[in-house]
Image 1 (spheres, helix red, strand yellow):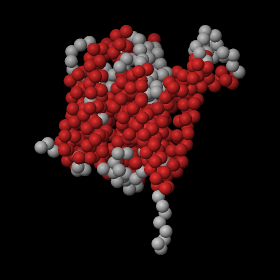
Image 2 (cartoon, helix red, strand yellow):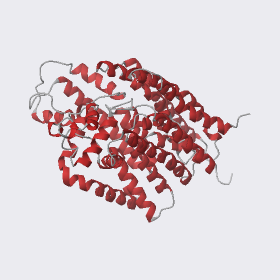
Image 3 (cartoon, helix red, strand yellow):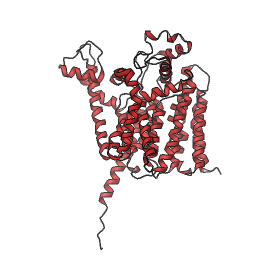
Image 4 (tube, rainbow, N blue to C red):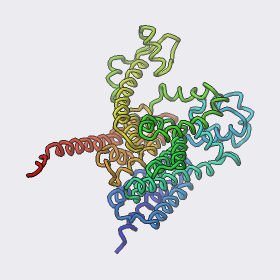
Length: 492
């Protein structure tokens, strides 16, 4: 009879081998991507067994070695596939190469005429041709830029950069094991992240910088959960600073740290300042140019945001005439969504989009206020806040979940208060449905047109919301039952 732990590990291996087998089938890029997406979805089947039976894994060093070893094997094997899932890797390579060429990626977009001379190099020319939104300067903060530059020290290499990102993802697995052990949870829960299809595919095939940010957060959490020492406090600060300057989101945890771990908050601010300073001196306000363009009007794979936007689109339907608004309203709309027409003009679709962003921001702000008041630990702060952010955001790419999945896995370990984290189950479910967002991409590669489907959006998001509502109901029911328990009478 097969040992139960070996069954779990065997399913972990299948999570990587299934999409690899589909992706290796011959065909053009679009055809291979179609098959890879099928493999991505089918990898959820063995993962469901891991989710059900991960507790069969003993909490031993041997298990840690097996989990990390198999996680590395699945990711390294997937490096045989080209980076089919997005164009982000080419932007990373370009930014890294620009550092070594003495060019400021915050100032010059890839298609700038001033860079035509550099792009005469065949390697850089091929990279430049594959960059998405090449008219916009980079959006990536300093820690991401340092990663791109380090990986490009010997010249731009997609393989070396993907290896670095796979290494960062394996650090997430190691850090999660340490964090669980230090916080009184079962360390074997690291398997829930190590073999989740989303990080396996998004680190190796997608090649996304989010792996670096997630590693910083998880290593910081492990340091904060252990007995406090100066070395761990500084390490936690550096880890959080890396997360902040990878994609900004972990800055949400600073108010909680200021209340409960002020030394770690000070270390974070200091480390973040040192990372920022060189870029601030050379790039200044240009650092926000690309990020501002990204944050103003982009939409991709939005769930609740699309629902929030719909009623405003009915109130302000698309029109070929600008709206007559007071000057302050024009200013506010342009700050939120940018300006597509002449100065002082606001179009109905712009106002609808701005109104939906205000409502989404209000909902997100309420969750943040609640977390800043109630949370005491990094996972209790960042978990619900990032879940809320991604649920209401107008841009939700699958790889964003790499930030959340380690925190969701941690909450399965039976720690204090873990049962009161309904967002964790919803996030794990989302990790199994997010691949649906890629379904329009093969046709996009063929025609250049992105055709989204409302039906598939429901397939992705309905299970997530069902899991979240079910979890919230269970928490409410548990709290109600606790209140209804009779209080024992002393001396009775």
